[in-house]
Amino acid sequence: MSYLSDKILVIRPGKSDRDYWKDLWRYRELFMILAWRDVAVRYKQTIIGVLWAILQPLLTMIVFTILFGEIAGLPSDGNAPYALMVFSAMLPWTLFSASLGDASNSLINNASLISKVYFPRIIVPVATMVTAFVDFLISFVILLGLMLYYQFVPSWKILLLPFFILMGILTSIGPGLWISAINVQYRDFRYIIPFIVQFGLYVSPVGFSSSVIPEQWRLLYSLNPMVGVIDGFRWCILDTLHSPLYLPAFFLSIAILVFFLWFGVRRFRKMEKSLADLI
Image (cartoon, rainbow, N blue to C red; front, side):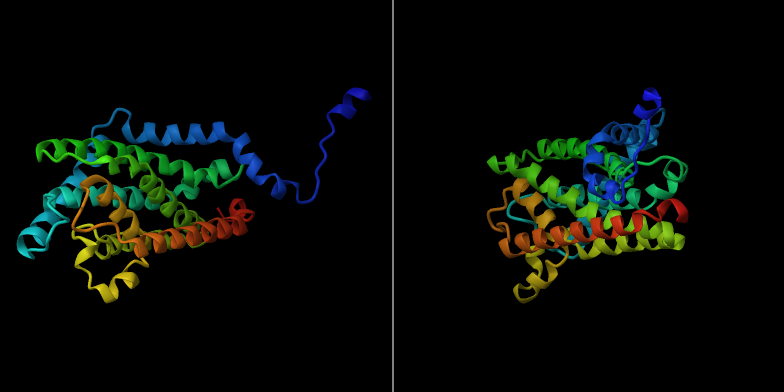
């Protein structure tokens, strides 16, 4: 009898909600397993995985350099080569767009796991973003090669780059969580994501410098949170003396980032309890 009493499971109302964030730490090994699985699927015994991480930003850089730099004649940031300015913006944008795309389908792709085992579901979309970060690191090596080719030496500001990398990751987490949960309830929503990402590429300062935006519209343009992230990348990498970091856009990006992160987590937690039934 004493042995049986030691094995009694006590279920308390609301206990899972109170311990939710503690469970994230307890299930950290599951996070690492899911992240490693996604990375292995992308790169193990494949060539296109690594090539895509290189070719996608590289080809986009070439197209944007020809369209905006050569044909439209838009100026670069400071004395930086136009191609280098574009590629330095492609890194945070690709990190954001790839994280958003991978997270949007993550819950559906892990339907069997979600419907059978309890764990904080927020682990799934966040774990998929690790693959996008690995792609980012590969592209960053290409950026270093371009800087070597153009003989462009960064200043001490390059030491602040990890902060803007973190900003780029956090910017994708909020919308990624929200979209991943919506995608479970409305399966056709996944067809909208590529359009949103493609549209965002052209309205973000990737192929051009945000300094070309008229001053009276620049703060409104900075409602796009990726404006502050991309400008921060260029400020760190290119040391743009003629186009310093636009602080109103920077602080506005942080405020919008925090809002979407709060909103995304809140909406995801609200829909999380019904995910197993909907999926």
